Amino acid sequence: MTGEIVKEVQPEPVKHHVVIKGVKDGLIFQFSDHCEWQEILDELVYKFENTHQKLLSGTSIPVTIKMGERVISDEQREELLKTIATNENLVVRAIENNITQLELHINEVMLSNAKIIRGTIRSGQVEHHKTNVLLIGDVNPGGTISSDGDVYVLGSMRGIAHAGVSGNEMAIIAASHLRPTQLRIANMISRPPDEWSVEDVHMEFAFLQEGQMNIEKIQLLKRLRPDR
Amino acid sequence: MGEAIVITSGKGGVGKTTTSANIGTALAIQGKKVVMVDTDIGLRNLDVVMGLENRIIYNLVDVIEGKCRLNQALIKDKRCEELYLLAAAQTKDKDDVTPDRIKLIIDELKLTHDFVIIDCPAGIEQGFRNAISGADRAIVVTTPETAAVRDADRIVGLLEKQNIPSPSLIVNRIRPHLIKNGDMLDIDEICNILGIDLLGIVPDDDNVIKAANSGEPAVLNVKTRSAIAYRNIARRILGDNVPLLSLEEKPTFGKRVKKFLGLG
Ligand SMILES: Nc1ncnc2c1ncn2[C@@H]1O[C@H](COP(=O)(O)OP(=O)(O)O)[C@@H](O)[C@H]1O
Ligand SMILES: [Mg+2]
Image 1 (cartoon, rainbow over the protein chains, first blue to last red):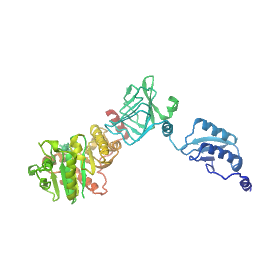
Image 2: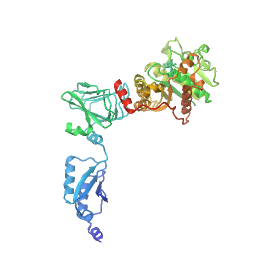
Image 3: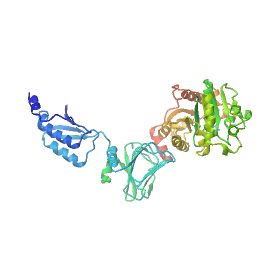
């Protein structure tokens, strides 16, 4: 009964940028990734205040937010949490995203004018670009990819990668599968460790620290190169 | 209209000529009309492997220079009805041989044969450009060695640039016990790097060397593993779905990775 009454007072037609679903252990907020961010927030507020009061009542309901392929900034995230906090019963448990850390990062890179190339860089082939470069494909042994900026490889990096060719020591090299013949950043040249353990199957990146080539999991990129 | 297939590798001595002779013969055994063209000018040996050396009167360069008609230069095989060889010149000056002229000859041969098998010289220079000029598709031969795979990769890159995309791969001279011990590149690893379709694998087999020396392609001796491998390859070229020869068990992943890195 209450549901019907609510419908009558509804001032504008429902948009479906936000779908709220009840599951066993809480709620799922499914956000569209094809609309403006503000529309999501507006619809959320609208649903909190008008249509979904009943569903949202109860004590500390865990909420999982599914963002689809949308990538949000730290400010947008704050905004979102603040909006949800207006409803005291809701506890945000997770903000999920269909993209991996590397893709997330690459998304940002793409916004800052990276050259995107597709295909395999094979033995004897050299690809150099002045801007950050994103390769969708492999670099084979004997092949070289280089950039005055960063080098990102969505694929196997088995050849030579050179980032920061013109001397930028803050440049990095990241790859889904980092098994290079050689890594170069600025003027530093390094061979990968001989004993690269078998379990290393996650995305990694190379960077210079105190003149030394280091390899870390991609998850640490934000910490080690906060400006990226 | 037939199909022209170039057999190429980059590196020398990995088995291009052996593969050309055996695939050519195997396709002829399957009832196809085949001509093999040796474009390794100055280093011809397809005729020797086929045991046809003493029948050569005219060669590829003679055809290009107009000394004879194309038909006159085709040497009929001793054993197979519909198998022919166009031999390379041993001594002639190769300046007359250009990609355009080779392409004309290959195109003409395609009109009267089901398959034109082109044996390519080693390297990536003029001889390579000549050999691939008339080809519709390419078969890249490699051995399970880092240097050979590296050169094969280079060749795949060059073929892509020449608009002969997606070549297929033959891994030749496989020695299962070395792969098993992690002392030889694994086939999966090779396919991973090259990223092209695997057409077949051929074991390292003394019969191949014996056969070459007696001028009789190994594929004719049905009992050997290499003969079965070449026949399977021919059937795959004809579109049959033939499973790969089974080798002994594969190495552990760990060994493979260490080997690969040790070579870097
Ligand atoms: N599968 C094989 N097993 C044993 N020997 C082989 C095999 N394939 C090729 N060979 C030998 O390797 C040598 C080089 O082969 P060849 O076909 O002449 O190479 P290419 O034409 O690439 O230079 C020859 O002596 C040949 O008999
Ligand atoms: Mg040869």
